[in-house]
Length: 99
Image (cartoon, rainbow, N blue to C red; front, side, top):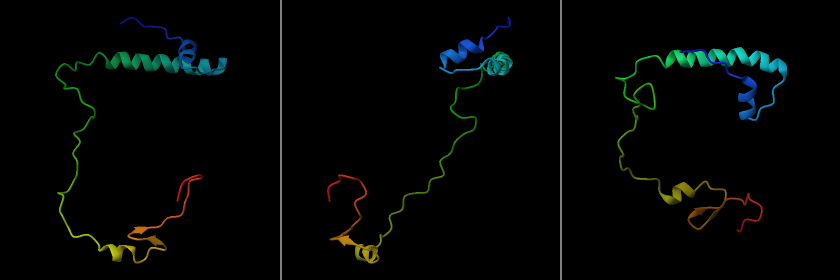
């Protein structure tokens, strides 16, 4: 594949970045190396590889849902600093919120 010259100033403009001349001089060879690496990777034969989102198989480590008795409502509310009926009473934290 023919070597392509990538203009870092043009790429920076597309990304809406303002680079100094010194930064352009630093980033130009880095960008060229990245493009060379991508070209090298594109030569790998992946015809037998199925497309995937991750390099490794993901497995959910989930347990079975088991119905268990929950805490009694009065027990849960016993240590509440304030309550209204069967609910926790929380301080208003958003300006303009209704009580």
